[in-house]
Image (cartoon, rainbow, N blue to C red; front, side, top):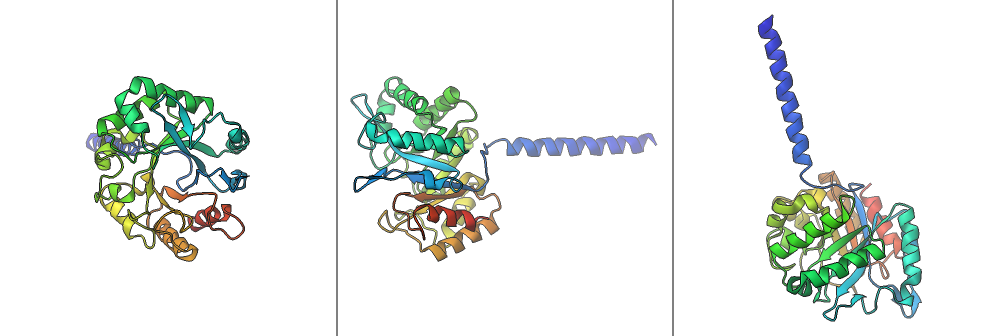
Length: 302
């Protein structure tokens, strides 16, 4: 009888240890919100002098990525070509606040093709980081998307991520936007370092990657390039599949029917698929407006 009890207790302890270890493994990386995100990049706020409102994305997008913040060498901060405080953005901030009240997150995209922000952070973190921090606070962003398209070391990147997490806490989104081939091991374009090493070292502080499957760095004509990212060591729950929403935005545009087929196949293959991102909102090709591109992506993941 005693032996039987010992066997039962031992089995229970093993089960408890196994379950605890499994949960510990799951806790290594952050998961924010829906497993299937719909990320709308919002860089063009005006087209031909007419304001482009993000309000039609209500109920569709989970995240609106406001692009692009720049930390300038003269100590100024610009959203594209103007200070964030410029009158032209007043309506945008109001619309974004309205969307936030309905549960949509807003992230500030830092960098992108307009280089210099990361070089300045490297040269004088003490001067330029507070400019970034204060801008994020002033405009009540829910997070940041680090789009590094200039040299920026692994150490610099980890320092920036850790400082953001310290200053903004656990609910703040820290995303990154490397080109897809950086995540599959085929390039080191986005900063010049190995993203798998970054993931292993500070992945617990990164919410997800908005991978660029376009401009020659991959595409979504099939699941092949996304599969390569997963095969290289990134969990599908960590990688949002980004693509262009209009052939004018870069190479790699996929026609809607084919894109929906690829997204559906990815969702079937990877139940934890992190989501889909579209660059960019204003000229997205949708049936009844740009928001419909994102609605179709959302539907394909259902």
